[in-house]
Image 1 (cartoon, rainbow, N blue to C red):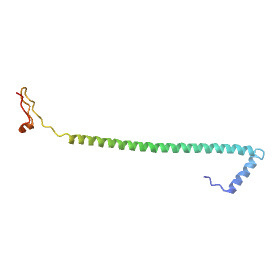
Image 2: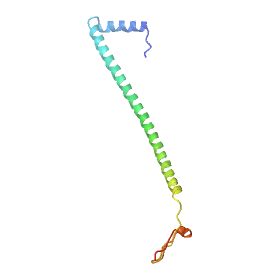
Image 3: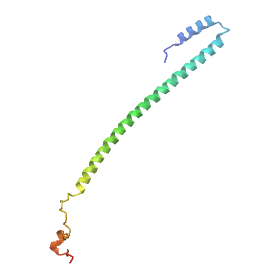
Image 4: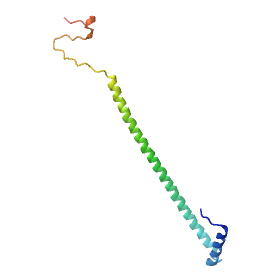
Length: 118
């Protein structure tokens, strides 16, 4: 994180001792450590929030892509259903309506299965 060597830390300690003095040095170090912990906590919290938001954005993108795929599959399924219905239902011949009093006949007339009512 910080590239501070041993001699640089010694120099900071000597300057702090000269500026603050030996009497107030322990309380100043405690206060400095408290601030350092708070800054670290803030940075860690911000990093976790950013990572959570990035994961959320990735999940939302995945969800959007999956929803698009589902819509495509629904369209394909509807097309297949229409094609299947069109193939399954044979086209019917239009028939003329039977006039009243006439005998309804079908293709079985040649076999003799249909008898006219007398």
